[in-house]
Length: 375
Image 1 (cartoon, rainbow, N blue to C red):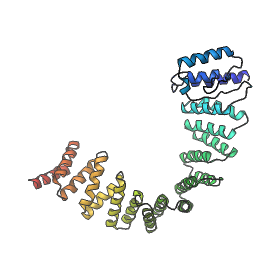
Image 2 (image 1 turned 45 degrees about the horizontal axis):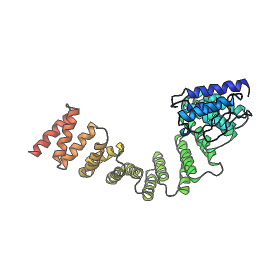
Image 3 (image 1 turned 45 degrees about the vertical axis):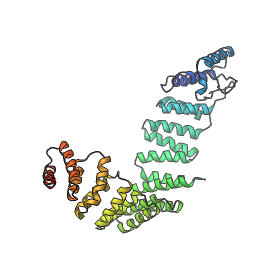
Image 4 (image 1 turned 180 degrees about the vertical axis):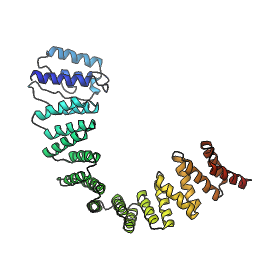
């Protein structure tokens, strides 16, 4: 081991030792002095000439003073022969990335690359550091170089993520398609890649390519309602409402508890002027997922237009109980409760609204009507 290697290694260890993630210095001392808690052999990792007697005394002290056996097992960086332990360096580079010490992490990854092995993994690691610093152009460059050395699902996934951050939708879609050409891609990963590729093509307004990928998912995972909902949304964006409606219906048939399918159906029915069916679909969507403010908005609107207050009131009350208070929605709820003769509930919500907005004229008028009915 030359002096330069020794200096780098000491810098690495000292930096890690100063991180607040460690409760004490036991783990780093074990690296420095070569203690393997599961082995009786000792390796000198930093200075090959450390006296064995000093090592032994150190180990005996640790045995008596600290429960170091509960600490993670850490590997030495160099053996007595000076062979670089790549796995050790990767582990410590990850620790530095987690601690946001990106410069030193890059030093380690560069050392791995210069060693002549694991170039793809080293380049991937450097890309991670630049991504952590939000330098996406440099991250992109290193991910691309890593993929050139060794194309992998992991690398393509990160590469596409950066491309999407940069808004390069066509390049991202094409890269997802490259990932689909990898050998032995599991069905679950194929579904992921087709979805992401389709979404990127859709962002690029290349709807035909997006449709191809969504339809591939229906073949790979025919019981996955998400692909039909995605096709429905795609057709809506192309203003093909009847076709979209059929896809959403198919999604609801495959998975009867999929709130998104019913919301899509409601949107289609509303576009087609079928208000009663739209209200029914929005209600079914909210019964499965109440946390949908857009569906609540349409339900309230349709409830007043069709004078179907009772059907809407129950779901709106459930939403109000769970969501941050919205004065306009609270007023609508109180008005619905007035129409279905739930005067006490209506008055309670009116008073709550007036505490928030004492000047609300609609609430004041509604309160007079409610009190008149109650008297």
